[in-house]
Amino acid sequence: MRNTSAEKKRVSILVITESKETAALADSALREHAAFFDLTYAGTLEDVEKRLRGAETDLVLAAPLVPDGSSFGSLLDLIADPDRPFTVLTDDRKLASAASAKPGYLDVITPAELTAVALPRTMERLLREWRGIRKIRDIESALTASQDTHRRAKLLGRPVDWEWDIRNECLAYCSQEFATLHEMSIKETLQHFSSLSSDLNVIHPDDLEHWQKAKAEAVDGSLEVEYRIVVPSGIVKYVREISKIDFDENNEGYCMFGSVRDITETKLAEQALVASNKRFQRLYHETPSMFFTVGTSGKILSTNSYGARHLGYEPEELFDKPFNFLVHKSDVPLVSSNLRKTLAEPGQVNSWEVRLIREDGTVLWVRETARSVEHGSGEQQVLLVGEDITETRKLSEKLSYYASHDPPTKLLNRREFDQQLKRLIETAEPEISEHALCYLDLDQFKVVNDNCGHTAGFRVATATRNPAYKKRTQTRFAGQAGW
Image (cartoon, rainbow, N blue to C red; front, side, top):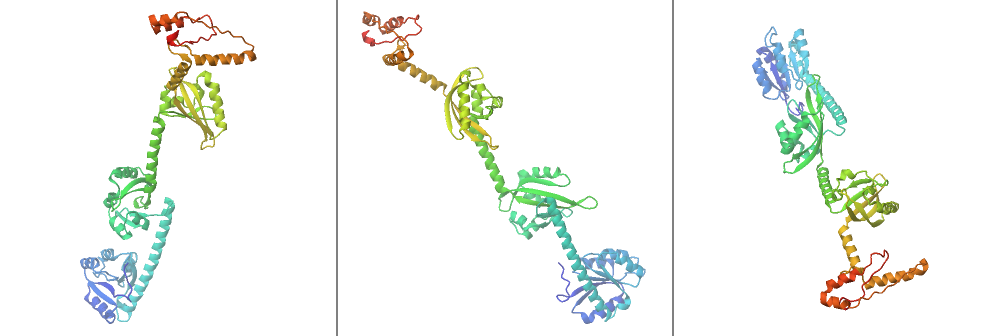
């Protein structure tokens, strides 16, 4: 800010007059106060323009350059400046009136006041008035700025971090937070963002088109967009920008203001969450097990891709269908009972084996493991994990069969015969039932084995089976070699 204090430095006064007499009077009047006043002179419009562009001028004392005042309007246009005071030297009321309408005007001085007594006092009075005006103006400016900042913050819903001068294409204001975000001081930030190109250079190249598109589609200049910036250290940061535009009375934008927040941590956390969710979804859908979520109504709420396709369906085809839709009709009571039991015992793990029907009608044996958990809505849901045990079941049945039968003849072996005989004896009296035991001995059976081979012997042994008896137990007692 310009320092106009007479106590700290000499006051620079530009005297504008083509009259040497007027210049001499001014010089003579202020000579005794040379320690406080520094006079320069201009006698033409060209001189005035040159002086004002050169050294700093604190006060302008202007007289008409021609007696008729014909060029006075052009002179006023040159010296009028809201940041620099001027006074006119004339006794022409018309010229004084024209001057009073210009910014920076303080007062009029008549030629009669160009004396050693009057002029210094007048200059000091005018400077005091100007300091007062500047002080009031600074206060008003600060108040207006404060009101604008409050209004803009209210529009944004958060403090204003920066203000962009649209007409001059430069950053007019930035907060400490904004400067820190860009790894600079406030002064460095204001200098760095001195043009539109420097502003755009901060945006990550891959996000520039996205930012420009969002800006172009902004309604009434209101913009809300997320993008990346590259700070001087090379670090990439994610930011969320909210900005708006102030318009003048001609509906032309003159100031863009906004708030920028560093959302890097949040964004990286979101990306990690998305990646984690993708991994979970991949594991959930591709794990070679059948996953079902069943509601209290017994309907399927979700199915993983592997499970649905293993049964011949797509996941969406099974959504909202009763789970028992997949269950073999003979096993429906078992499944319904176990689902009710699981819902009644939250957290308890239950398992059972059940037959499920594929879309093509084939049957799968599945081991179901179930547990009831509480959904976010407070409703209980059953999580089912199904393992296809069809082949295991077939192998188990085969092993069970050969554990009780003689493989060559497919007759019951001695061990199974003994167990069945024991059960019949134990249940005969309670059930009031009768049973018969028939022992058949094949004579010369060894001769068949020795001469025709054991295969022929097996065929002879199995030929003794009598299909006429529906309830029978036939057993091979003898060893292969001694029939």
